[in-house]
Image (cartoon, rainbow, N blue to C red; front, side, top):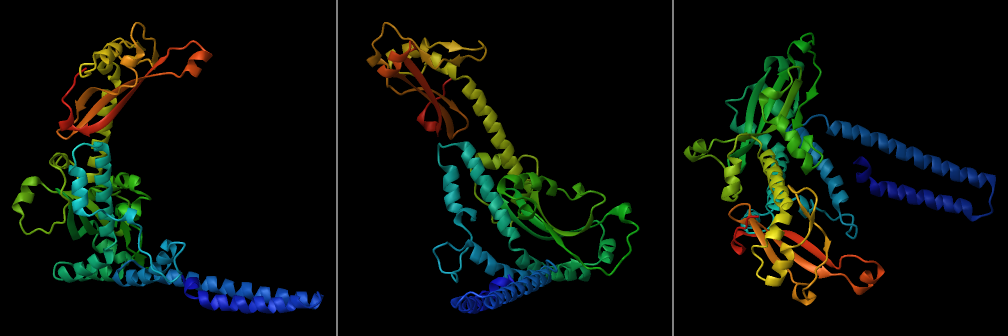
Length: 428
């Protein structure tokens, strides 16, 4: 960071050194001029080494704590480096650049429209909602400095003075752990999805008997932060980490320290109806997903993940019955294609038959059934999503048939998510 702030100074030094080195090489080559070049290079390397040492010292100073004041200092230094890192290659060095659009939550109206749209893959909608919930939670974590300031002001009468001091500085002593052992101080809550709040709290653990011999030294410790952005390297890992942050009692009895912890907290639907003045910024989701979120548990991301897994198992079971759906051909309106599909050969176990890819068809003109894409079956998942099966028979090219004696007709099947209103239910 310090090196970046002194780019201009270093650049000027480098230009002067290069000019002197060029002058040294300008005349006839001699040992004296070579020594001159080596001296200039040695001074340049020494200057850069001192610059790195000063940069390291500034970094240690900026990271002294994670309280309100230290966050402000660290953020001002970090934002300069972050803007340069995210700057497009074709922009000027001084141009500021914000975070990429892919890391920003969608507008609530756009998200609601995407979730309510009939048809489409419900798995994609579940993944989209889980992503948006995670992004909004991480966005709240990015407001830690603002929320700590508000907590100090709003809870001035309810929070002990020692706790307010920890919130302000972001550091604590050993005596603070022993004085407030196993205490949890709620600081902020906001409803992100229906019936689920994302809450910030300061939690204190002395470690119990395992740390009983530790003296109350004057050493200063930094308050750590635990949440989605600090405990996971990506969105896929976020839910797994967050499961360990859903209960205060899940902390190990030997864990020691004070930390800002973000936790999910579920809201009882009856309690939610009774609360009228509670601040909410909840997303609006379809009724089916809202009902799913009312199930037991505090973590909405984990609930969406389990629903996604259940959907995958259901879809896999439906696809296993492809052969039965094709051979029943109950929804095929073309009589010639229906006859061919009903007699298409299968292989494998009779309990789970699989369609053969190729077959012989005799006694019927190929023009009557080849190249026709037909609707075969529709299996509903819910009121808005149906898994539809289509099939088409094609014929191999004359070049393929001339090489060897193989079955000339090929069957291709395709499962696709559609709107429930497009097709009626089909059973194998």
